[in-house]
Image 1 (cartoon, rainbow, N blue to C red):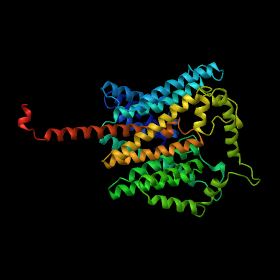
Image 2 (tube, rainbow, N blue to C red):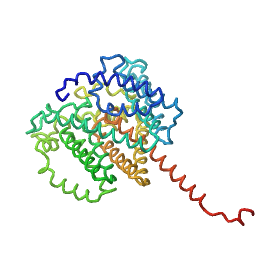
Image 3 (cartoon, rainbow, N blue to C red):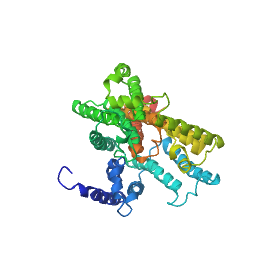
Image 4 (cartoon, rainbow, N blue to C red):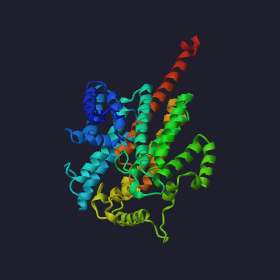
Length: 445
């Protein structure tokens, strides 16, 4: 690291830090445990170094549970929100859905860690656990500010890793083989979804930042993140950013609509040549769909046939990866289609309910808050959610802790901010009522 030779010890120190923070969380400081886990949520490559250590593969789950248990021991409670209820119903339904897959002979019984469907469900459930942990321990404005700050620092390290990886390659023309996996370890498309979400979060958050120095730093972070997004060569990531900028223009800064329109008219002369090639390569020289686009069409046709066999409850959660599909692909390249195929109409309704509540929670905070910190959190979270919704049309960007973990921490912060805001309004109303003079004649009637 920076020529000091200590980089070899960083994974070991980070691994030991997880155990220390588990003890700290159980000992009465669960908020510190949450702070510690935030940078590791997206940085899968660093966490992979723990695998050779005892329980290393499960360190994130162990720390999350330690934070939750430590918070409950201290009597902390979740703020009111429908999102917690919907997540609980969704989690239970997904587990029952796996047994539907067993009944339809599509998957093994989800009992042991050797069962791939059970492992998929277990890993997915870490996301709502992170959400619960954040809701329990984020209790005041200072904690909300710290969570946003640590998220920004974490994003900066992700940007640095992505940009350095991209700059080690020559990009005179687009080359699929040169695309890297990124620090999230799942591929450039998944990394692009993460970057698009948090570029837009901090763009929206900065709209309410009053200090010039802080504003400049935040815009610098947004610029670095958008630059890193550009060199992921992900068309889904590009569209997620553009749609979110449109929403930002409609809700807050109308000048962005003109800038967006100008960009759409001139983008082919503005963006680098390999990016232009990537965006326009939907068909080959013979006029046929290029391989990636054709794969998606074939997968969706296959998914449609599967859905029609069991439209209400689907084929069972985590069963698509166990079937035989085009080019041995294990994903539908569209999360909404995947939800329909595996969990049916019921699962899709629950998934849409989650997204609707995410939008409602962030929009409510953005419109009702008077504190610039809360306004920025609300608008930023709304834009990040919009980016997430768009990105999931191009693949599963929802069930990965690395992509949405920080998003749900910020959602927990937004729910707490809403509660703090409403409590403050109630107290102010009570003070106004108490301050009103009492008519002595009315007091004795």
